[in-house]
Amino acid sequence: MRKLLAPSLLGLLFAGTAPLPGAPAEAAQANAPAPILTSPEARDVWTHAQPEVARVTHVSLDLDVDFASQTLAGTATLDVLAARDAKEIVLDVKDMAIASVTDGKGAALAYTLGEPDNDELGAALSVQLAGAKQVRITYRTSPKASALQWLPPEMTFGKTQPYLYSQGQAIHNRSWVPTQDSPGIRQTWDATLRVPGDLVAVMSAEKLSGDTGEALPDGRRAFRFRMDKPVPPYLIAFAVGDLKFKSLGPRSGVWTEAPMLQKAAYEFADVEKMIDAASALYGPYRWGRYDMLLLPPAFPYGGMENPMLTFLTPTIVTGDRSNTDVVAHELAHSWSGNLVTNATWSDSWLNEGFTTYFENRIMEALYGKERAAMYADLDWDTMMRDIAAMGDAMKPGMTAAPSRLHGNPGKGELDYTKGSNFLRMLESQLGRDTWDAYLTSYFDRHAFQPQTTAGFLADLRETMLMGKPDTELTLQLDRWAYAAGVPDNALHVKSETLAQVDELLTGFEAGGPVSAIDTKGWSTQQWLRFLNGLPRALSQERLRELDEGLTLSNSDNAYVQSAWFELAIVNRYEPALPAMAEFVGRIGRGLLVYPIYQRLMQQDGWGPDKARAIFATARPTYHPETAAGIARILGE
Image 1 (cartoon, helix red, strand yellow):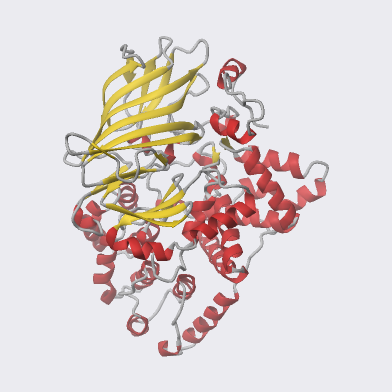
Image 2 (tube, rainbow, N blue to C red; image 1 turned 90 degrees about the vertical axis):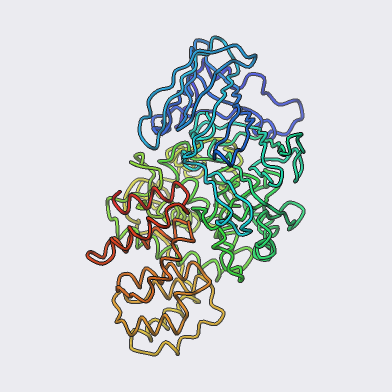
C-alpha cells in the first residue's frame, strides 16, 4: 500500500479545501493540493526537493521574453505549504541567475544556491522560510537553458520571424521555472509573458488575455494564462512565434505558422471525434479545451501532451491522416499522465504504456479494428526488436531509477509497447467491459494525483482480484511489472493489412522486381512494415532499384525516409547520403534521427566520420535534448 504525507503535514495539505455542500467531488479534487506519496518507491532521485517538509502548491510567473539575449527574465512567486516546524523549502534550478529572493510582501529571505550535481540535475536552491507562505524569486534564464529552443527565422516555416518553444519533460523546466521539478509534486500555476509586438504567445493553460494579448506602451504585447488544476511541473509549457489559429470545433483548434495552417487543419480534422471517443471510453475530458500547436521541424518529439495545448511535430502531417494516432496518443494523456501521473520517472510506463493502450482504443473506436490492429502489430514488432537488442539489461522502466534522463536515445520504447501490451493482456483476461469499468474508475479515483507501479498493482488487486488467487496467478502481474522480457500470456494482435505487405516482402526476397510492389495509397504503417521487414543485407543494385522505384531518398514522408536511411547505411549505399544529410539537418525529432546516427556509428571505418561531420553542421538546428542524445551516440 502506498502512504501519503506524514500527519503533521497531511492536516495542512487539505486545510480549507473541503468542498462546499452540494459541490461536485471532482471540483474539490481538482482544486485541492495534490497528495505527496512517501512510500520508498515514490522517492524521486531526480529532484532536490523535500516535499514532505515543504512543497510548492502554486507557481505565478511574470516574465519578459528577450530574443536578442535569448533569455527569460522576471519573477516566479511560489505558494508554499510547509510542516509546522519547517525551516526551509528546497527548489530545483539549472543554469539560472538568481537576483533576489523575498517573501510575498518583498522582505528579503536568506537563500543558498548549491553547486550543480551534474549536467542534468542542476542545483538546489534552499530558501529560509522564516514563516513565509510565499517565496518570490527574481531571476534570468541562460541562453543554454535545456528546456528552451530559440529558433532563427530560417528554421521556421514562415522564414520571417524568430520562434521560441519550451520542452519540459522530463526534468528540463527547472532551467526556466525555479520550482520543485518532480512529477509527484503537482502544482497549479498562472503566467504573464511579455513578447515582441508582432509575435503571439501560447501556453498549456486557459488564455485570459485573448488570442492577440494586450498591447503595451513599449510596443510589446502581454499574454496572460491560468491553469487552475494541479499538474506536474513538466507540463508547464509555452511557445512564442508568428502563430495563427484555426478552429476545428467547439472545444478544439490548431495553432501554427501560416504556411502550415490549412495542412494542419486538414490533418487534425477528426480531433472532436477523438475527444468524444476518449470520453465515452474512460470518462469526461476535464481540461476544457483541447488545442494543438504544430511546431517547426526542430521539435524533438512526435508530440508532447501539454494540457489544453498539445505540441506536435510537423513530421506527422503527411496529407493522408495516417499518423493521427499521435494526436490520439497525446489526447489520451489527458487521462493517463496529465490526470494520473507517474510519481517518479522510474514509473514512466504508467504514463506512456497506459496512453499507448488508450490511444489504440480511440483509433479502434473511430476507424475500426483493422486500423487499430495495424498500430498494435507494429508496436509488437518494436517491442520485440527492443527486447532482442537490449535483452535482460532492458527492463520496462518500472523499478530502479534510470541512470540518465536527458536525451537518452538508448532507452527504447518498452515503456510504451510493453506497457500497452500489459494492459491489453489485462483486457483480454478480465474481459473488455470489466476492464473498461475498472479503468474508468481508476482514472476517477486517482484524478489529479501521482501514482507508482506498486500503487497501481495494489489498486488492481484490491479492486479487481480480492479473493481470486487463481485469476491473479494467471495474470502474472509482477512478471509484467518488474521482470525483463514478455510473459507467455502476452497477446499479439495481428493486422491483415500488414500481412499483405508481408506477402510482398516474401516476393521481393525471392528475387521479384520492385515494379511488382504497388504502394499506391499506402499508409505510413504499411511503409514501415515493408521497409523494416526488408533483409538487412542487400546488394547495391537491389538498393538502387528500391530507391529509384519507390522514391525513397526523396520521399515526402519523414517516417519513410528515416527507415530507408537506416537500411541504406547498414549497406553503405552512398547514393542515399546527400538526402540523408539534408534530412537530419532539417528534422529534429529524436525518433527519426537517433537511429540514423546510431547506424552510422556502427559502420566502422565508414560511418563514424560521416556521423560527426553531419552532426557538426546540424547541431545548431537541434533542441538541446536532441543534441545531447546525439552527442552521447557519438561518444562526445
